[in-house]
Image (tube, rainbow, N blue to C red; front, side, top):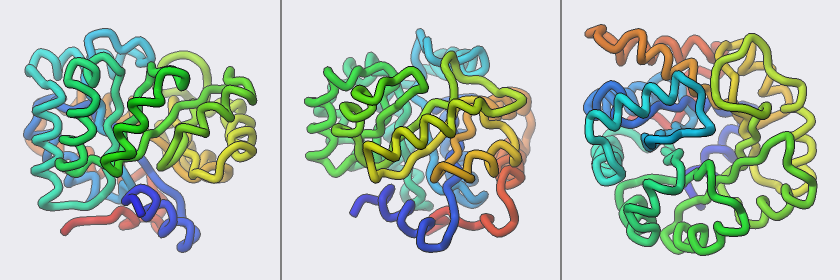
Length: 272
């Protein structure tokens, strides 16, 4: 059983839900990324999305775009990100999912990525811009190395397309709460709940909702109908704001902890 499946099944048994923070690898630097991954595990993250910086992140809003630019200026690439995951695995077994555009993975080599990511301790890969019709070989490479292939679905996805996407997906499904790019919003689109209901009709996989979630109230709202809430831009914006703070890592841990109700604190897999 994959670590992702194990995590969701444990949460389900306990009547709990997942909080999934997102950070961009290498922002503000790789050592901070390493420390943040461990801190997020301490702070109640059920799993963590680790963004691979890309020069043209067209699905992302300005906050994550700026984070990618900062990371690329630090010469962060897939090889160095996998080295970080290898190091983090000495301290925590919280699942880590690479969140990437396809180009950096293709340049690295998809077979090589699957093999080296598995050895490093990555649990799954989510590719934002790989159409399901083109994903078969990549998904097979991941599966051969016991990695989950996480798929995105959107409110604009037809029922037929949802079924096609679900055929390839493992681990969990990521439901985009609204059309457009990533970024914080004052309220969650009511399209998210409708989309989750439609996805439930084509898969038994857990469903996470992301894009626009930035407060505890948002997290609790999403948990009414989905298995997990993803908080990305709000976390990355805090990292940007605190870039020169000596206690950045602790403050980000506190920020993520504040997104959780008390009964959910400590539901991550924790520290080894």
